[in-house]
Image 1 (cartoon, rainbow over the protein chains, first blue to last red):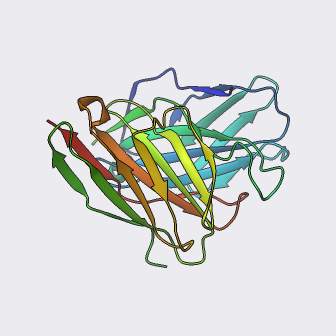
Image 2 (image 1 turned 90 degrees about the vertical axis):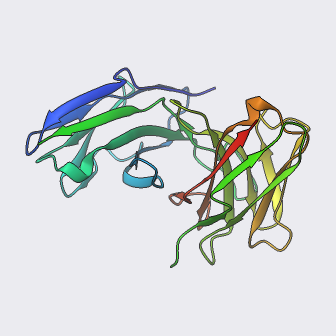
Length: 120
Length: 113
């Protein structure tokens, strides 16, 4: 079974600074998907960024970028120019490829999360 | 898109009672997922549907749990004979198909007294 590990229970960063959240995973598959989700306090989980394992280029979404190291099974999230609205729990998640439309291990496997604090 | 909606948002019940939660996915999304999230943990996968067919169930889904998606649109998750250990946030997500991103609803927070 796949596992996802987020080794930083909590991170703190000054507003406008850059912070990197770590994520490692364990899998025997060669093709899969990786995600970072953000869960603000008492609000719903939203997708931050997504990476397909077959793509060598690291995904980027505005101030958010990833460092995907497939051989090392590492998937870190970098947040540049941190803003107060970035304060939230951040979850790294893994999903197996859907080999056929009828089924497969389609559920996401999440890490335990990193609580990001933005200091004004 | 109005997003994934869940009802109720909060539920308090006594141990031994049955509860039912509803999830309305994003329209035209044929995949619907249920997750459970306990305090301080990431969500854990419970089950998913493709249209009305339930295709996968986690070992976390005991016999007291049942999920349905009768017409391939909304889904219900029922917990029978609730236990205090069932207290958690129950999250629903939907996706257009198996390769697309899952979008989450706001969750139903269950407290079993």
